[in-house]
Image 1 (tube, rainbow, N blue to C red):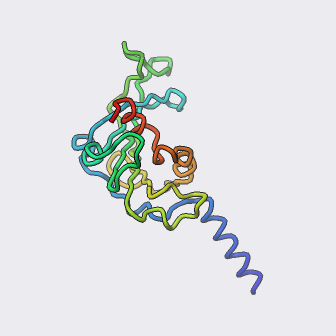
Image 2: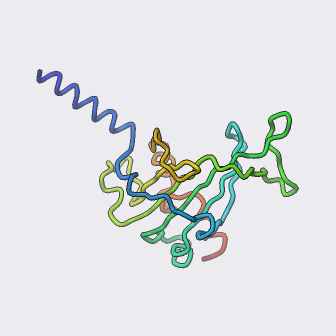
Image 3: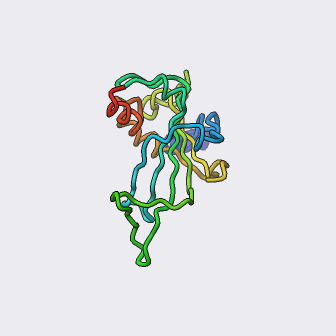
Length: 177
């Protein structure tokens, strides 16, 4: 009996280490982000199959308060909205006159990265991304039921010097803000 309990505890700990779920429920879908937030950049992902175009948004409060090279303020909400790229008859992603992928109006996923005081405290140090939390929503604002966040945490961990984000800190730097 004791061996079974030890095995079960080890199995649960192993599952917890590979599937990061704690705290994602705290992140709400930011209703109206596409009109209330600033769309600050667009990222083409021709490497994805099918190709996607990502629209990046930031809430206005962060836009007003954020400064290049400094941690982003609590209350920061960053949104990454995925769109299907337009494809030609042969299935290749279509580029516009500017050389950028052309997005369709179809949103496939909405990812939210939010920073609040004390968030992240439940994660082990090797997983934690400061005080950031992540959520994955479908286009209608409902949570993706089978979402896993290991890749969010592991990928963003490499951006610790930019407060765990890829694009907004770079956008601030480009503008000398």
